[in-house]
Amino acid sequence: MKSFTGVFICLLNVLIPALAFASGHGEHGAEAVSLTSTTFGYASIALFVLAYTLVIFEEKSHLRKSKPVMMAAGIIWVLLALAYRQMGIPAEQAHHAIIHNISEYAELMLFLLCAMTYINSMDERNVFQALRSVLVSRGFSLRIVFWITGFLAFIISPIADNLTTALLMGAVVMAVAKDNKKFVALACINIVVGANAGGAFSPFGDITTLMVWQKGQATFGQFFNLFFPALLNWLVPAAIMSLVVSKDVPKAMTEKIKMKFGAKRIIFLFLMTIVTAVSFHNFLSLPPAAGMMLGLSYLGFFSYYIKIREKRSMEYDRPLGISTECPTDPFDIFKKVARAEWDTLLFFYGVILCVGGLSQFGYLAIISHQMYDGLGPTYANVLVGFLSAIVDNIPVMFAVLTMEPHMSLGQWLLVTLTAGVGGSLLSIGSAAGVALMGTARGVYTFGAHLKWMPVVALGYAAYLCASLY
Image (cartoon, rainbow, N blue to C red):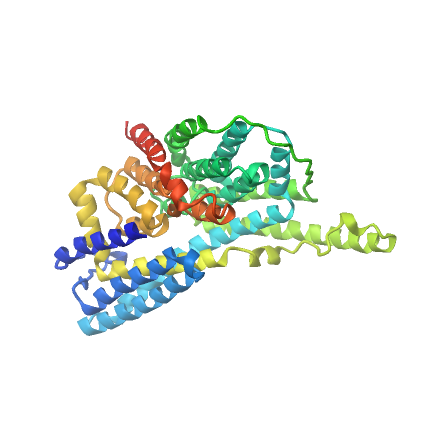
């Protein structure tokens, strides 16, 4: 946590000498007055630092991460409106700016809501449990399990997202050898690196790649240029860590779990939803979120069919006393919507509006000038990766997209990759790492991951070389 505080101190050291720097053009090309040297501006920065500090300490305080950033977002925009009034700037400018930020959040939220609903539906149909059952019943050695879970994390996360994939593979590791603490810690590190690397070469694999794609900085197909660098980012540390993984064969489990009715068709509908979202963006120039919501209607109609079928099965089986094969409650899509990670979705709202408000004050223009004009895009984008490991890749990437530095496609792909895989350097640097710290509590810890950070950094360096040369 000291490193997190240090980053913000360094950030303020960058900001304070440059307070007189003009912020250039604001949202929609309107001329923006720099408000960085005002009391309202200072208060906004302090409020954001405080809110994000509470986010970092979520595990200790048990205060959901969405709550402090949502409060900070609302107050920052109040301070911005007061600053505009004091400077004589028309109130409509703040109104248009916040509407712009809310529309960006709406696209992201609807996209993620659809994806989360599909994931929850597949989970309820035992898709992931069946996969786990197959893996833990094969009697693989620990080293083979290490490689299989890492590889599956790499290839599943581009579709299912890195958080869901990490939780699934973490459950497999815990089921296979939960008493072997050394193996569980190494396997979890491998899963986090694999899930983050796999999510970095697909618009659907991570929030950062999704934001870059929706912003139009790269097309759907161009993300796959990152496949080889991302593969290196996982393979290099995985190969080194596997050398110390035991070849012992744990006792095979006899657990057998079958997928429920309609599971395979829901997987197919999810793939068709992805195709729909990509087609909306590539061929119709419509927001991908609109395509995802159309895809959600596919699930809606199919869920109606499942519900009718299961309700009939329940009515038929109960008199015969053989209702064990039927669920006690028919499938309901709206229950899957309710199970979405609302804390995460509201956290994104807070982050986007906080960063958007600081942008209107002029702070992001200062940072953009210091990083991209001072260091150059390559060094700045590499730095983004290190920042995402300490702070979080979501606000870092949204800040970069809000700055809109003039960069080539290659540089936009580079920053997409650095923001995505940079979080693997620390356990707190990505949602996958934080989730696994909860799954393997006391075994996969910040310290356990930190011990292998130099090895993970070798993968980071390998992918940088691959992507740059």
